[in-house]
Image (tube, rainbow, N blue to C red; front, side, top):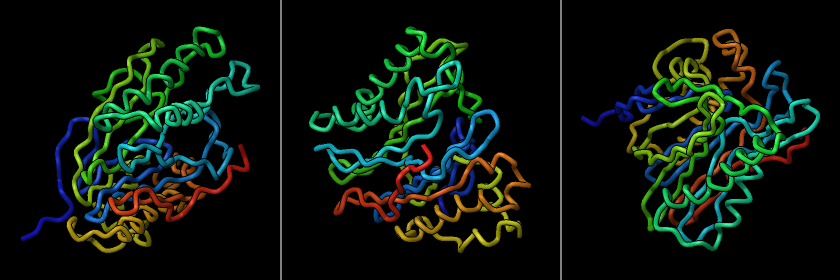
Length: 287
């Protein structure tokens, strides 16, 4: 008998029945299917203190231009660091990541982990310089439910794609510990067919994918064997997971779901076609 989506054990994530969810305000779903990767993300940016919606069109998935293979990165965490008086942006981490990725476009690398090391170095240095120059006085903390991790997470950068036809996934975690910037943590993630690696609100994932709770029935969809999951299946399930956060019922389950929403952008990465937008991001009109 074939098993449903794989159950695996790990110490740092909430795991159950073919998915894991890392607690976050950003909802991103990364899934490997027999046909390739599906990446989906919400577009909301909200105020760190009051939760006010600042934009619903923020891009969080980005293609990587490289000769090494077909890849993309997605970002969750603190994107813009304001000055202490909150009058201007002291550092835009998304822009720093983009500049670093552009500089690596023609560089050779053996694997995605090596690329990740090079990618995060300028980002780490930009954070360090911002603090040392006085443009920021404190490093921000981004919420996480991973109790085994050191310090407070600032940003996570997830990389997925194919090199020589083989899937590869790597995560970069930039963090600080009691206000001291730590060396970036880089770890390779195992790839399992049909496994949804998601950020968002864990209770939404649990209710949606583990239970028959009627409050989220509209977003549940059929159960699918991991080896049978198509790209379209993963697209539909990822979009449903993100949309579930915006349902009024979700707001009663976890009020922080209000910080998730906006325009959902979706991409695939496949060996024959590389990176391809299924639903493109829209211009960030609200900043």
